[in-house]
Amino acid sequence: MSTAPKTVNAFAAFDSKGECKPWQYQSRPPGAGDVEIKISHCGICGTDVHTIDSGWGPANYPVVAGHEIVGEVTAAGADVKGLAVGDRVGVGAMVWACLNKHGGAPCKECADGADAYCKDIVYTYNASYQDGSSAYGGYADFVRVSSDFAFKIPDNIPSAEAAPLLCAGVTVFGPLNREGVKAGDRVGVIGIGGLGHLAIQFIRALGTTPVAFSRSNSKEKEVRDLGAQEFYNLSDPEDQKKAVESVDVLMLTADARDMPYNMYLGLLRKRGTLIQLAVPNGEAKFLPFFVVGKGIKWMGSFIGSKQDVTAMLKVASEKNVRPTIQKLPMRQVNDGLDMVREGRARYRVVLEN
Image (cartoon, rainbow, N blue to C red; front, top):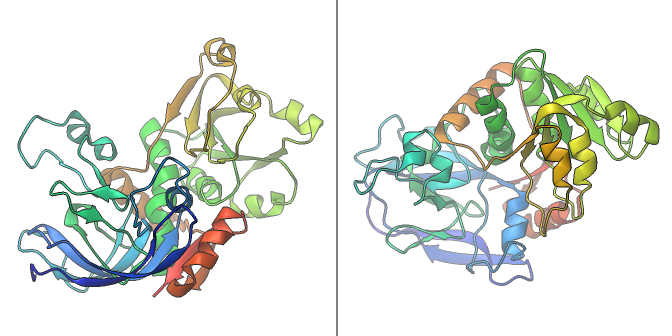
């Protein structure tokens, strides 16, 4: 594998106005454990919008977003194991973690298999490597990443459908897998969108009971087709009453402002678990009594570990979990971003080179 920088053709945002423009950059020289990937597809995630628009704080412009990447390995370093030129692989929201391979103080998170929380993590974009070079994402024609975070895509999953699984898929699958949900558990989903429609499918695939909550009846047929066994319209007072203490686990995948957290906590049975996945701009307001009085565990979950991604792809392959996507050519990246900003995506936008 050549150690020379590579000219990459990308689409980058240069300020919080949100427009991505054609841009070329010189990739960092690859390490012995890196792979180079020719990108065929990249999904647009809500995180891309938050970052490009500086919704979570000032971004490090220029930003080449995109962390739902699928493509073909075109070069591999001398130390790469398990991947070869020609392999179809995916890359998610992180491209490097220490994995306790590089000396120094032991990393408890990596030792515990929680590498998504590594103290030295490098995210796919809007981040810097240990040598100070910038990490750029998948709105481009090529990317170079650590082979530890490039995953073979199962043959029966098309590349365009695989892309959203690398972030949205593992984001919802990971906590279900780690929390050990089991047959007989009732798992609710708030927010039937890019994350929620995959959550329903993975809940079904794991043998548990999916329960969908929405604020209108417009998506009822669709979510039942995805596998939801029950549906509640939380704008309907009668459905609200029926939904009280109806689930053991509740996955919060919506990221709207001013969400009614007290209502959501009321949907959980005593000693239930609220899994916070979406990250809205702003603060959450709730009454602590609803948490303390019912013994509720409120947990966050961030993307997914290497083990989570591998397990997620296996389940998606075997149980036919697939995202609903809308494809656009890479050059229409700004159209795709606007679809996500305005809530028009059904349910994931995927860019194609």
